[in-house]
Length: 67
Image 1: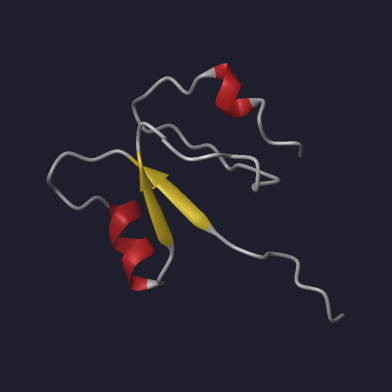
Image 2: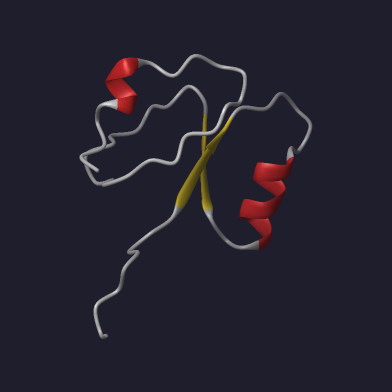
C-alpha cells in the first residue's frame, strides 16, 4: 500500500510551567504541540482523539472533525 494512512500528527496540551507527560512524549518523538486554549484552524484535521485534561472542550471543536 503506497498511500499514507496518517499525514500528520499533532498534540494539544495544557500546562503551567511543569513539563507534563504529553509534552515530554511529543518532544521526544518530534510531534508538534499546540497549547490550550486552541488558536489554530481545525479545518485540516480529519479526526481528533480527545482525552480528559481538566478543561471543558467546546462543542465547536468536537464537531469540527468530520470523522
